[in-house]
Image (cartoon, rainbow, N blue to C red):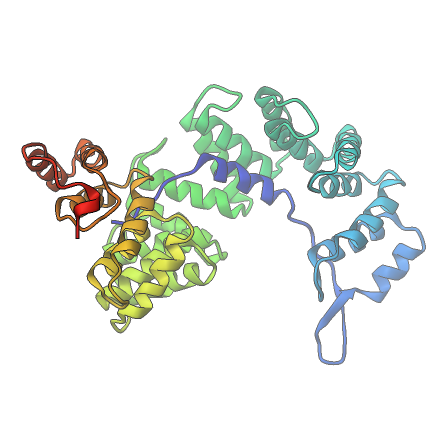
Amino acid sequence: MRLRVLLLAVALASAAAACNRIDHQPALADATGEAQGPSAELLAAAEAGDADSQYRVGVAYEAGEGSEPDRTEAAKWYARAADQGHARAQSALGQLLVSEEGADTRLAEGVTWIRQAAEQGDASAWFRLGELYRQGRGVEPDPVEAVRWWRRAAESGYADAEYALAVAHEQGLGVEQDDAEAIRLFRLAAGRGHVVARHQLGEAYRLGRGVQQSSSKAASWYRQAADAGHAPSQAQLGYMYATGDGLAPDYQEAAKWSRMAADAGDADGCNNLAVLYLKGLGVSRDVEEALGWYRRAAEQGHASAQNMLGTLFFSGQGVKKDLAQAERWWREAAEQDYAPAQYNLGGMYSRQLSKTLSREEALQWLGQAAAQGHARAGAELARLEGEEEAPPLSERS
């Protein structure tokens, strides 16, 4: 069964990443039509000292229009505009500086620029100050202060702040926990095109958190985010097509959306696609292909994929049978409290297939799985507890 675990830190990190969205400006094109960077007209205006043009040149370099992103050039142009009092340039320059690793002086300088922009009423700076207080980066951690700055930005219609404030209310970070307020704010951000807010609304409807549970409404929100290229939403949409949850079952659609998510590196998408290949649903059955996708998901820590990868190594499906690899992947999933893997590990001891598992450890894993309601683990635990201890590990074949 596919696991979907909402990670709170990821949700807030999405807000932090969203603050780096920047407005794109026309880029210069060569004879082939390929973008080459800021337009000649924009560069000329920037060189002549126009602060807004300097800011926009910085945007182009940071975004990497027509070339690889160049943070050094971006910072140079942001600084020229910032020195003239351009608030958005000050905020953007500050964000570049605070995002550098291991440079305390640059961090302090970045905070100063963001504060200057905030004093001029720049909403992006208000939002970024909230992020700094949440992270404790350049300032003392203070979730209440973070919420104060996010609220100020949100009241000006800044979507990233609406999203961050929604997560704060959802989790009780610096404010009283309030699902209804979180939903209201997610809706505001989603209405302004915030893709991750749309995904979060899908999560809310799928789980019935702050709204009446509705798989069909969840699918609708996931689709809006998926159409915008949001890989976790694409993975969830693929899963819902595969299971018929909120959507008419359609394995071809399940494979399409899961592949889009998997190609973007999403672990759930990789796991979905692996399941479809293993079962031949919406794609031709291909165990080796399934193995590859399970591995990609497992290497990202996906517990269900780790368990299935262990199972394939145990059975020799699509790969040479390897009990050591089976134990390795089952253990990684078991350590994430994944009950089927905990049962599998306990079973390896019972069948004397492991030279490393002790009776005590096997009982521990079976007990943890049984406590989660895994019936076969409960039965195996009772059987093992009634037996004499297995031979010492050194005597096992």
